[in-house]
Image (tube, rainbow, N blue to C red; front, side, top):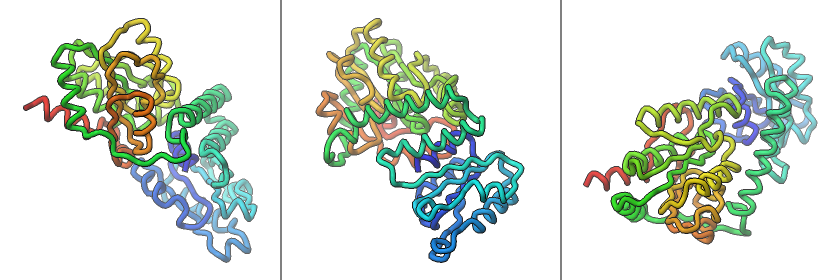
Length: 346
């Protein structure tokens, strides 16, 4: 799955899964919403015994015929990798006139970031990204893994899922602080396309808080893979069209390290009375948030407990956020943002 999303971010029009038809079925359909055609060679018992190279060659050629893509990718699955399928030989035999990325990946790795790295290696070897960008991406992946291990969903043996605090209650308290003229910090630190909905929360806070609220956002469109840069441009434009000015704290793929920029900003420009953090709140150092009333919004039900234990007073969950941000190019209304606006109107 991680390799599929990375291939999308790299600009692949078509991805062929060399394996059984059920592999990554849900995410294959989600990626169709983002304009990526996900095909399968539909390996079965016969293919497991005699190999599926002919099927892969046939699907490669058919994909070229059907979609006229600018870039195709082929990924392995557990079954094709276990039987030792030669993806490269099939690509050579297909003889296509478009670039084809070959990702020999399966599900037997300890970290899901391995799928990302293998896809990036294929892109680097084809000259689609530079060695510097590859190094940058792998460094960010390592930091993301560390953040989750220390403060996120991988920080405990078991984390029970939770829907978080009641949005009406948290929104009422946030509006109370805003109406009292308290000084607030409004932080968007979101991961890739999830920012299309998380940004709506920061938009609502900025609209209601006015000059007493300072907005920071990881929307630097100069860094990242092609789709990531375009998403940052889209969201930044949407905020600016609504009159929201913001300070950059990094790109959409820099969420594991953007919290350090937030800490530096607070040290230089504080103190603040409250903070709203949407996206990946646990990547912002808690030490930098001391003395503030913190409202954190995540899309991970298992992230609620670690945030509460760290000291975040209000933790909200935007359920089903990821499916709602696939295939979009404008800011999507959030439940918490809508709640804030509705209460403010009364």
